[in-house]
Amino acid sequence: MKEVLEFVAQQLVDEPDEVEVEEIPGDRGVMLRLKVAPDDMGKVIGKGGRTARAIRTLMKTAAAREGLHARVDIVEE
Image (cartoon, rainbow, N blue to C red; front, top):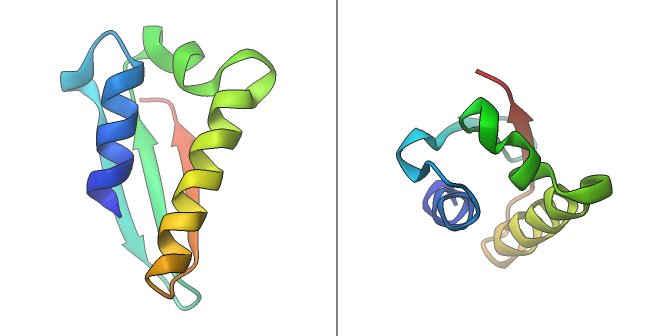
């Protein structure tokens, strides 16, 4: 899961080396915390949050295929 989110985020940003994904296991599934460079936040969130929504949908689908529940939080450094 972590690798998928990392790959997707790296393809969207100008500074792929700054992409960090932290995977936090929980009772109901896994939480993924995505950190990118401050200048790349807009690219990851997208106009009206569309890109962020698409990333979350993609990760929920990937998690469901593994029988898990996933939540993606996009955080600033």
